[in-house]
Length: 309
Image 1 (cartoon, helix red, strand yellow):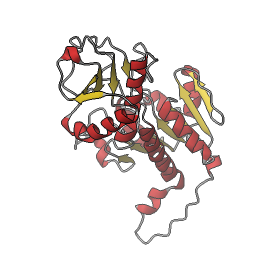
Image 2 (cartoon, rainbow, N blue to C red):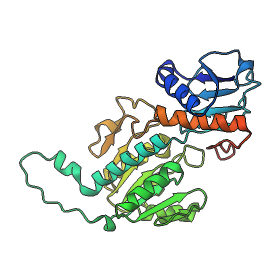
Image 3 (cartoon, one colour):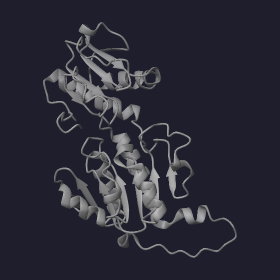
Image 4 (cartoon, rainbow, N blue to C red):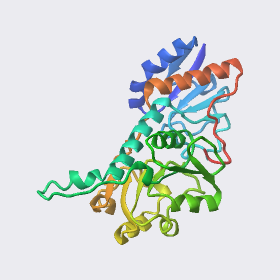
C-alpha cells in the first residue's frame, strides 16, 4: 500500500479525489489517498503551496512532494523541504494556456477591441496587417512558452522566443542572455510573458526594457504579476509607448479594487484564468510520477532549486 497525503484546500480535495484514484487504478497502483496521515506514514505528498503543510521535517518516509501548481516560487525556498520536489506540467493546462494566449494575440492583431467598443454608429475602417507582418515575442520557453510559440508560429506570425538558457526549435528564433533579451524586446509588436517568478525575472519589464519595445506594441501577461513594474507600465501606456496591456496575473490577487489597472482604458484585467490545472490530466501526471518513484525511475519535472523552478 502506498500512502499519499493530499495537502491542499478542501475544495481541491473535492475536485481531485475521484480523478486521482482513477489515475492510480489505471496505473496499477495500490494507493491509500487521504487528507490526513501520521507524518511518518506518508510516502508521497500531493501538494498545493497554500496548504497547511509548511514544515516537511516530520515526513521522514516521504519520497517526493508533487506540486499541483505550475509555479513553485512559494515553496522552493522552504528549507524544511529536503525531499525531491516536482512541479506540475499538465497537458490540459498547457492546452488551456495555448488557447488563451492565441486568443489574445489574435484579438490585438485583428484590432477586435476597436469594433467591440466602438458600437456607436461610426464606421471605422481598419485593415490589420497579415500575421507575417506582425512580430510576436515570447519571454519564457518552458513547457507553456514553447507550446504557445509553436501555435502562434503555426498561424503565420514571426515568433521570437527568449529564455535564460539557449533553446532550439524549428520555426522559432530562440535567443538567450542579456543581449538576446534586448533583441527579443525590439522585435515585439506583441509581447507575451511566460517566465517564472525568480529574483532574476522580477521587474524584467521596467522603464528601461519597456522603452526597447516598438512604439504601439501590445503586452500580454499570463505568467507572473511581479514580472512587470506596474508604475513603469502605466507610464508607458500613458505615453503611448504601449498600446494596450492584457494582464491575467498581479502582485496582489485578487487585484485591489482601487488599483489603477481597473480604470485604465488601455488595460484589460482578467482574474488569473489564463489556464488552470485540469484535474483529470494533472492526476495522470501525479500517478505517473508515483509509479516512477515506486519503480526506482527518475521523477518527471523535478525543480532545480538553484534556478528556482
